[in-house]
Image (cartoon, rainbow over all chains, first blue to last red; front, side):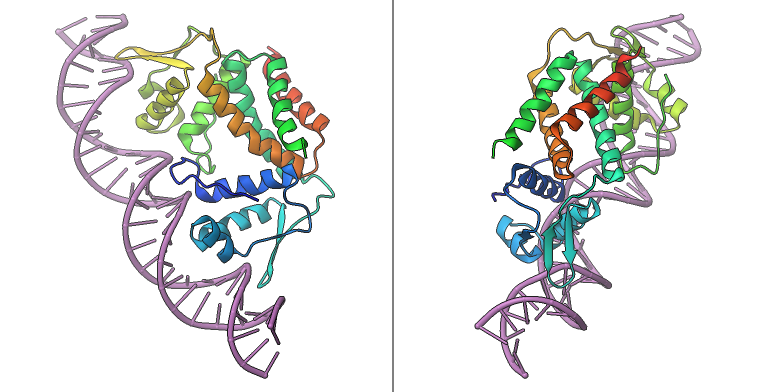
Length: 125
Length: 125
DNA sequence: CAATCTGTTCTATATTTATTATAACAAAAC
DNA sequence: GTTTTGTTATAATAAATATAGAACAGATTG
């Protein structure tokens, strides 16, 4: 999978990495059971510090997306149930985006269309 | 309109403020043409520094949501057209959220239902 | 078994961001 | 004409972000 980090972005590197791993799983590039590269290998690969990758991995683990096995590696989890905490967080983060969509004049239909078009990006594999 | 700032939140105060103003407009509590409180009055009201409010106002202006009239005040804009930059940003911010929704096992239908339920919050006024 | 690789932990540093605090200015509003 | 307005400047503090280097002990591999 190709990871692209933008150093100039206002989004922290560890967040960019977290998001791209999540998007990779959603796209099907990464599957439950797959191992992620070691923090050192990944860091060298994308040209950032080991600790930055480590931080991203722990964020992914906190969200229940991967399981870190100490002294071994990180494995993408299977998702048997939807965690309540994640569901709540996603809803909270979605809220201001939908509000702004309405404020700039998007209709409900347009908003659903936008969601659909993003879903399509992930689905077509 | 009631503004609630959580000092312990990981979300910066100026972002919380920005979001709540946007949500207020989406909800209909604030309307195009309405004036926002002065940065000083607002700051005193919610118990934060003037510059924090000022930063939020400029963020809102950058997004085309309000117009700051120097030495006068801030007025909520009317939205005749959807700015391309905002549309692009919203899409970019929506993407990781939808990806994570898929990753934790939400179906497309469930995701649309979540969007609908959030839209309903804003609509019922 | 021995060498390598793993995540973990620790210390340290530099930069940026966030927040508050004061103060002063000039234009707008009253 | 006094008050209020956003603006600008300086300063200080704390937290977040990112990097660097090193050491440790368990897991993996040859």
